[in-house]
Length: 76
Image 1 (cartoon, rainbow, N blue to C red):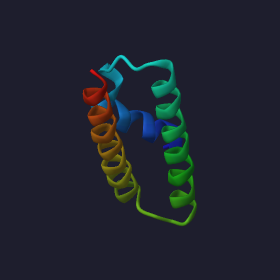
Image 2 (cartoon, helix red, strand yellow; image 1 turned 180 degrees about the vertical axis):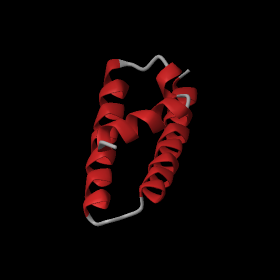
Image 3 (cartoon, rainbow, N blue to C red; image 1 turned 120 degrees about the horizontal axis):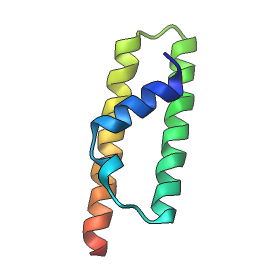
């Protein structure tokens, strides 16, 4: 599976796609996903197990999601 596809699939599992983000926050999310895509590629190249990579990406996205939700709640 392509790194970007793996990140996109994991992203769809959370609530981030349902949020209405400002342009700045949307760009920040895109940068975060680009960094995760690079990480996935590096891990694949190093021979890491696909499911271990997927699990790590899921944890990182949920953590980012939690942080982003806290920021959004404070700004309301």
